[in-house]
Image (cartoon, rainbow over all chains, first blue to last red; front, side, top):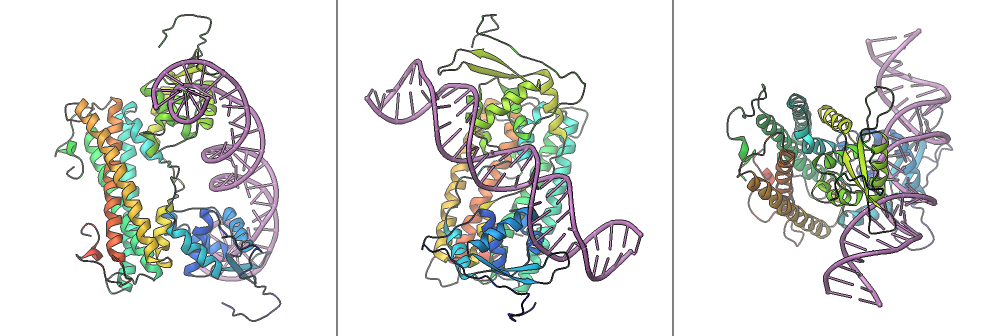
Length: 226
Length: 226
DNA sequence: TTAAGCATGTAAGCTGTTACATGATTGG
DNA sequence: CCAATCATGTAACAGCTTACATGCTTAA
């Protein structure tokens, strides 16, 4: 982490603004990157990794898109960068959020998200289940349950790490961990719920032989009382 | 609903196949349309409405995209259409699924969905909450809770209608309603869970004055026991 | 008369994915 | 020696949104 030494390899472009006083905005991906930069400066490569885990469970992007967006962010004055010698043919750029970036980010959080296009392939398949072989459906839901349980374990691990860091309590409201804490809470509950749902569906389909009768229990009332 | 009268306004293109025996496939949107057509023939316009509610909660598309995709589906032999006099300058087309379409659809359901790009703006905002004004966050989550509760009521209504149609029990496994039933179950549970989560977060933020202490209860343990 | 609903389509543009390209360092 | 990791970028393409275009029928 080289400091602000005015070496000739280091160029800094921070806080640049457009002439007019209009509120500068960016795409949602831009805010996703800004929220990461607000926690710590990083290269585009590092941001890509953080967009894999843990953030990747609610926002993803490819590295090609990240580099392009970072470029736009620094053009808009929401992020700045500092060059450092890189491993490859190009120098690497350590990006950080600017004051204007912090303002834009804080502003954006308060704005209620507009109706977003939803695309959930698993639910689409569940909806079409009646038209498929019971055996294929069984495999589909069994595999899906595993995915949810793996994710659940992953979340739980991060959750434990965070709560331990704050003596088992809630992180302070202005601490970045507060955001992780709140987000993880929903993630954990939803993964658990989804896994339970898979079990419930498997029960509904029955164990095999195409008998039509669910194995046991009272699966027709749902995973929880309705 | 004009029957198969060989009137000169009616052209039928069903079951067309490409020469080779290769398995024909389409985009996920294509399967979304096929699953609707498997339930009942429809015009592109009608499919657009059905993609709004109830299917819109897990798959959406604009009409321009729908018409283009239907064209591709009929080119691929997965759907066929029959022309009928339309209200506008063009005749309307009533699409239906072909045998090849049913096969492709049934096949597709069994294939586990690959890792899909997730983009949840609300969770991104929750993750960034620590950097925002408590008041803005409060408004955000209060509004969000309303959205979830509205959706919950909507789901519940459809759920009640479906279970009533099957004497309060589970629809038969090969009935389209079985797909709706299973899908709604997860939808209802997740909307309820999300609403509870919003309440929990609001409790964590506190009722006002920036005091930092949650209102009452023991919100730090989460909406359910962990 | 005017707006909303029915009904289909084209075109421009933005977003995002996949593939291509380069090259140093470190670990097996 | 080979593969993986670090690190940034370009180009082609697919998917999706928004806007434009047309015109009938029915209800307010």
